[in-house]
Length: 124
Image 1 (cartoon, rainbow, N blue to C red):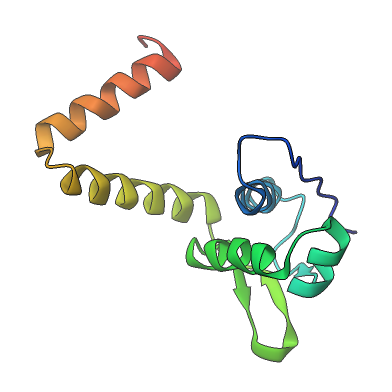
Image 2: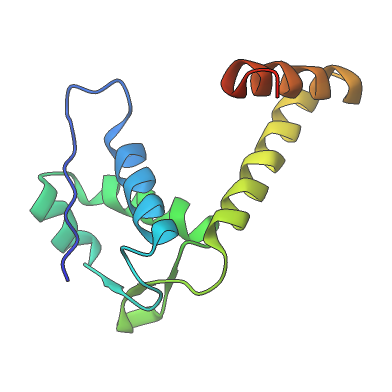
């Protein structure tokens, strides 16, 4: 199995975010199984034509989200556990942090989420 990723340099989304999202999706769906060894930062950067810092930034974000784990000099692997649940929890925490910085109270923050859910899923 090999990691097949394409980065669109013309996309509005930053390359590191494209890489982060793709690896997270591959891990969440099981196409990258738990324990799968990811390429080195330099190796993946060379493969994708990206700067090593770009790949390192994506790996750091994935590690923060619990999708991958770095085992020192042994490499970087897809982590065990429910990566999707960790990703959702991280997104929720980031949302709360942002709404607090913007000065929204709890009710306003909830209302914004409800509106976004209605827009995304309709009135269910």
